[in-house]
Image (cartoon, rainbow, N blue to C red; front, side):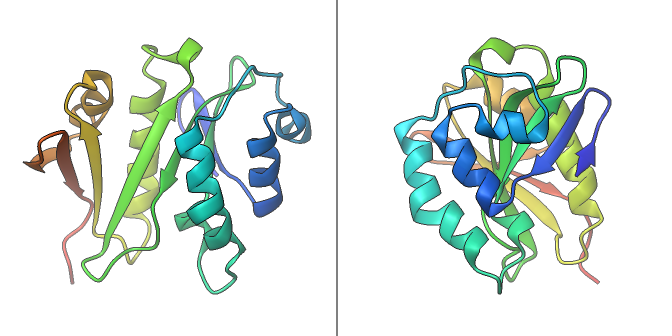
Length: 171
């Protein structure tokens, strides 16, 4: 787990991920959290089925680099969003992150804080040299999170900005 000033970032196990996808508050009950009206987008459900669950089930992989980390507000004792790492570090020591804040908790700085916590964790991982992310060009809130955490824009496509933060120099 990662702890920040207002949040606990908790990596979910395979069974917890299954409960997460059910959106019936069974995960919240297991974790001793207040109930939520959380929903899952079709895109996230597809990501669970195609990538997240199979990778977390693969015992040859470090599940921390494949699972969803749920963001828990200490004050509200509720889930406020999620962050994930898209696989183990590549040959250049890069990990990619993706994230989302639940609608009712947006614009409160939770994700900026969570990404900051993930950066601290990444710096402690020997194989991680940098973190990359992509944001939609119109999603100002998403790329503001990265700017506030000192990510640099390293490129763009027609629809996306690409970002990178170096966590340590190669040895």
